[in-house]
Amino acid sequence: MLTLGVIADTHIPDRARSLHPATLETFRRAGVTEILHAGDICVPRILDELAQVAPVTAVRGNRDWFRHPALPLHRTLTYEGVRIGLTHGHLSWRGYIRDKVVYLTRGPQSYRAFAEKALSAFPAGVDVVIFGHNHAPYNKLHGETLVFNPGSATVPNPLEPGLRPSVGLLRIDDRTVTAEILFLES
View 1 (spheres, rainbow, N blue to C red):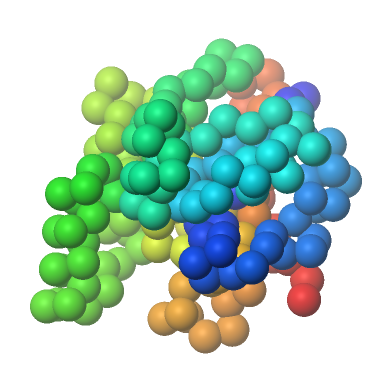
View 2 (cartoon, rainbow, N blue to C red; view 1 turned 180 degrees about the horizontal axis):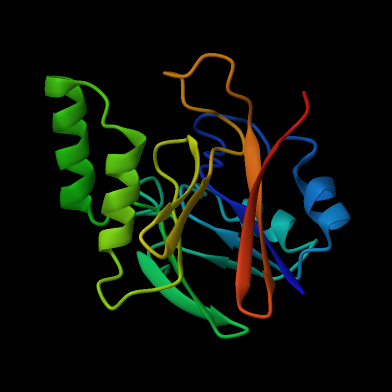
């Protein structure tokens, strides 16, 4: 069985000073072999800290345009025959601006709308889509595709009071994927 750590929206230092104290230990205890970061990393040292546990694969979030210009917006990865699409979820700079306009004029989009947008980044199809961007955990099947957002590891969605920082685990065993959201203790 392969275990992948999943993290998103660390926002350091613009919204938090450091990773949640339980982040690295949570991934260590789970025995992750790789960590997937779904963007909004902000400073490069975060990837270095995560790499103390396992190799890190990341994509560029809307807060990473200038600090991580070499990171792709989307990646398609394959583990044990399972195709995983990794994206932040804003899709492009234009998509980010459009999201902001929608938020300001109509209010927040549904979690499902964010998930569908992330899914649209992989028109060729994948088995799993991992995304971030809205800081809210999400773990649902859309047709036959698992769509997974670990939530924010540092700053949960402020529109959902009581939501705690979280990360995720993907376990792949004989082409079967299970996903788990882990809420980090205070």
